[in-house]
Image 1: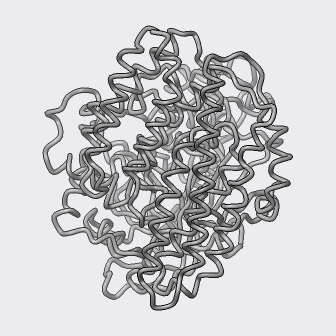
Image 2: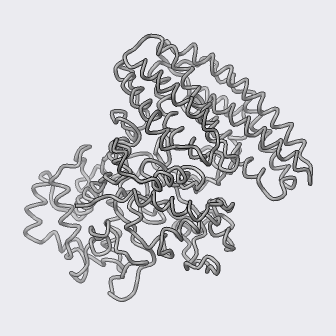
Image 3: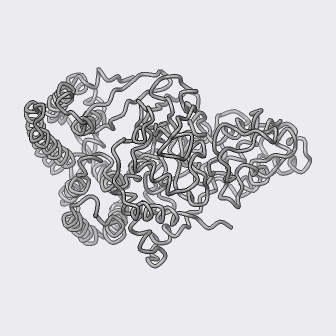
Length: 632
């Protein structure tokens, strides 16, 4: 298990990384790619030296020295982006030193801590009220960055890679640009996301040159959309006003599509994402871009999983159940009969202890699979459960279930709810004795006897099928440009830009599934109040994931849900505190719990106000209404 101390020792990292990043295979792109990386790495090292000098020059009550340090950090980030595709793909451990989120990460089940390190940490410190007070911390960070950057070239000793690997590193970088780059995820305070995206995309162009020179099929189209995308990024450098929707629709997504066609035609498709990314999909916003079959259906007990404070990560399942009779593998495609059985069970009141409650009681299809209550009614019929019932739509695209991510799969979640005395207080055996189900179970599971766990398998299969992706936004991205109005278009650009919504609710699912690999689900500490009055907020007593693992960084940590269908699934937040979308956005606008005066020491949401106007808040909510699906 890697600890932060090991990350801070460059010599140790080099030895380990060399053993992990030696590849074999021939490549027409290897030599030019390595040459480009050498040049970029040297440029990055020089930039870290300049940043180091700027930090050393910071003086108390000297705003000019702080501004200079921020400018040097921005330049350092631009240099890093030139080599990001290479570091993130071939030298992943090294990239963690430079550009990790400024949040403490916790590796479960061993509960080892990884303190934040790198440029994102420096950005946060450089925007504190008194930067000079943090000079020693800044120096510690920049010294680590600089010493590691100076050793980067030694990582190339004996390095080889083939065309498939190089091209996959570039296609993943495109997703990184489209989701994290233009949203400002890496540098929300510097607001340098657009020029950073330009540098990252220009690196793609340089590395692709030998492939395009081969005059491969689709090469002309790739070159055209590359140039157009770069021109658009260069012309729209201002972060807050950049037209992300137009960029994606006219240039970026066509580039992704034609690049995919070219790779496929050259027979150089390579997928190291465990099947999470579907390279047969047209583009990132296609319905099948992220493969639901790659998410845990029932986590194997021998996998080591990590749960950073910024996410719940698990080794992706391949729709494989535990190799016991009850969870026998039924392949990678959920068949229609299993889904039909799951839908029947979803509405089956016999699953509850009083024969009155079904899954559909709290997840009503006509209400987009929630119940419209701040807290759902409990089994006794008059009290309420602890938290709000989230919509089940798109819930299969997660690595943890429930608000605090306490179960790893939908199967485990179903069993938890059915057996919970405050929810359904049920006995699955009762359903298994009903004659109608005996026939159905035999049809779906012909190879084994009926067991309670199979009810969970069927329920989970039905829930995984709840992915309509037919909202006005989806139709717009599919080519119907008349379906969204001007406010909704402005709202998307704000959502992915100034409002910073897209830095937690990641495209294309707009939940906490982190791009570009989509292999972990985020939890965040927002400081959500108990009430809706932001002028007189009351502290909430729900400790979130802390109740699962009682460590301070988990206090009030909750999973980031999708905002798809959010206009139809209020009230909002884990406790149903907010009744309107406008109030939710205003809570974020003010800087979360810390911003409205609540003591939230481990808040992961920035407490810096977003400075959204009333009109901008309205536009953001207008866009979220464009994410509402039509249900049968």
